[in-house]
Amino acid sequence: MEQGRKPASPRDAQDLAGNVNDIASRLRVLEERYSNLRKKTQVTDQNMIESERSMLKELEELNQKVLDLKHGIFDMNEKITVMLGELSNCVKEEEFTAIARYVELWEPANFVTRDELKKKIYK
Image (cartoon, rainbow, N blue to C red; front, side, top):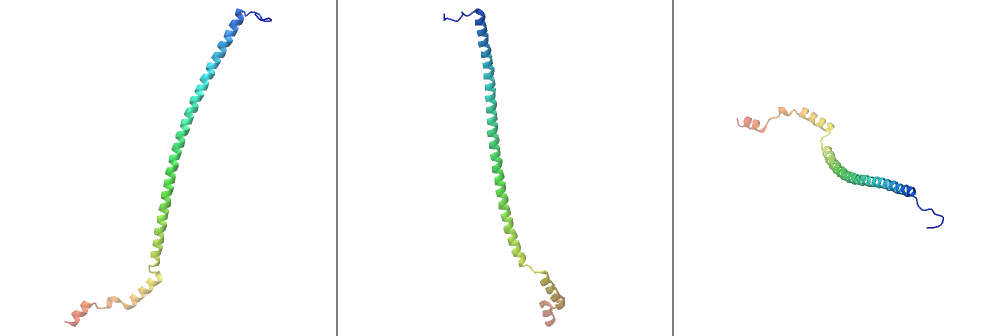
């Protein structure tokens, strides 16, 4: 035996065993908590990965829709440009009014058709 130390009494041994059991119990609780935290972290990571994939898919779909809209707008602009070009070739109201005056002046209903003229000549 070393000097200055007393021999271990059964009471000291029991206290030591109780302390070891208490520490072991606390260690198991901590290990279980750590395991639960690891599982929660793993589930959270998986959910984040799924969310990221879902968001990327939605982003791709939105990008495709935006691209389709751009193409549609470009096509509409081209059609409007063609329509404006065609409208510039149409008769304006002033020109139409002038033609209407000439038609009223000439009174084409009073003209003779070729067939009517032939009938009158060869009668």
